[in-house]
Structure formats: C-alpha cells, structure tokens
Amino acid sequence: MLDKTDKTILKLLQNNGKQTINSLAKELNLTTSPVFERIKRLEKCGIITGYTALINHKKVGKSQVVLCNVSMPDYSPDSIKQFEDKITQMPEVLECFHIAGKVDYQMKVLVKDIDAYHAFLQNFAKLPWVKIDSSVVVLKQVKSTTVIDL
Image (cartoon, rainbow, N blue to C red; front, side, top):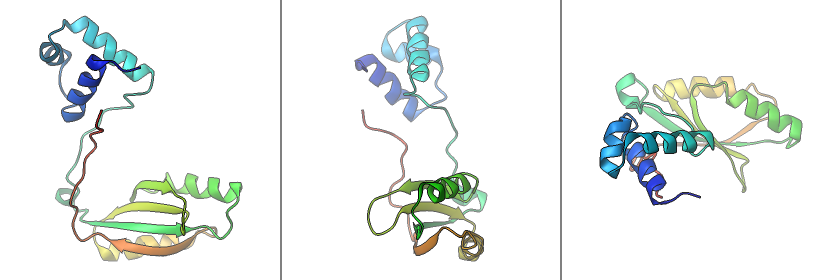
C-alpha cells in the first residue's frame, strides 16, 4: 500500500523524472537513503515501470495523429495473439487498446501526414485477420498528460 510519502515521491517524479535523489529528499524533508530505498521498492513492485523523455511529435516531423478502429472477423485466441504481436512491432502505433463495443481495438497512430497514414493503412490492410472499421483524424490535441492523479 502506498503511504503519503510514496505518493509524494510519485507525484514529484511524474512532474520531473530527472530529479535527483538529493532534490527529492530536500523536497520531502528526508535524507537521501530512505528516498532511494522507497524509489527502489516502487520500481521493484512495478509501480514505477520506467523513465522516459517526452518528445514533441510535431518537432520531429510526425504531425498527424489518427485513431484507428479495428475489428476482427475471426475473433479467436490465435487471431488475437497474431494481431497483438504484430501491433507491438509497428512503430507508428503508439497505443493500442483491446476494447468492448462495436470494434475490437482502437489504436493511436502517429505519422508524418495523411499520405503516410494512407501508406500505413495499405500495409495494415494486408493482415488477414483484421478489418479497419474507421479512422478518426485528430484535428487538435486538447489535452495530453502522463501524470496519474494519486
């Protein structure tokens, strides 16, 4: 179970993952050893799963976000596994959710432009166990965060 100090450490790291143990300890009014041990425990138990740099996708030439809805005509364990294995290998797919409803999956796809998305779809459509239900072109991102409210 997370106590108040654990939650504070997580909040601080979510806002700045590059903070040093020293700066966290000062913020928490603790010494570095217990802060270090708490972070290691949070990592070991899987609450902290990694550290990464957040990148402005437009500044690296990837300005088109598309939400792609996919159905599986053959909704079998083998087809599901094949699809999920293939999706994890596609760098254009940032996120993929197995969902309940009219479609089976929703993917967040990031590409250079709509022509690049068209090329992605042409390649993706070759997969025998999927049917592209619809694509939703994102006009503007209103909110994006990785911070989880604790």
